[in-house]
Length: 216
Ligand SMILES: C[S@@+](CC[C@H](N)C(=O)[O-])C[C@H]1O[C@@H](n2cnc3c(N)ncnc32)[C@H](O)[C@@H]1O
Image 1 (cartoon, rainbow, N blue to C red):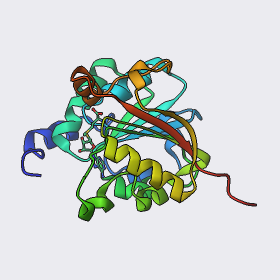
Image 2: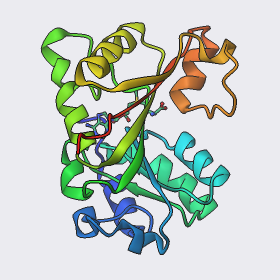
Image 3: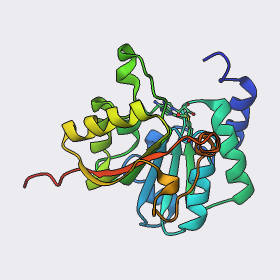
């Protein structure tokens, strides 16, 4: 992506290794050492400019948050928020979600947030959708038993596709809203995209699903 990866962003990321962790594979199986506590770990994939994960980390100091974003020139905006707030329970990773199993061991992550993931509407790009079955398999390999995915989007096509994908994979639907901002759901934290799309009057779709407990 020519527009998104810029040398200045790379330099800024390199200047803050305490916030955007270089070579995160080194922490596989021992992320709790990095946070110096045993609190549960929640990750957001495609964290973008970081508003959601920063606000969540401020509100929930007993949860460790990790924001994952592919593009350097986008994650630097999340980095700015982290520098400003200096939150001990939030770290960022500039990696592709395809590499999740090199970074986290099975059972290290309790919850995954997918907020306004790119819809990739063309059928030939289906495999890039973050709710495609190969991603669901990756998530299963890092989550605790009965780990959760919380998913929000304004894109109805992606939402319907994802509900089918979750169901075909055997995930259990725990919550669904077809119009989050006019529902009784409490404590919603808006993302940058959510703000933009909801201001246009678009309904926001949201669901929570969990993996089934493996048979013993
Ligand atoms: C539409 S934006 C939404 C950003 C943010 N979650 C929000 O709601 O404001 C989707 C983000 O996901 C990131 N992304 C897409 N595929 C990814 C992947 N495979 N790994 C990590 N990040 C990814 C994109 O770079 C982009 O910043």
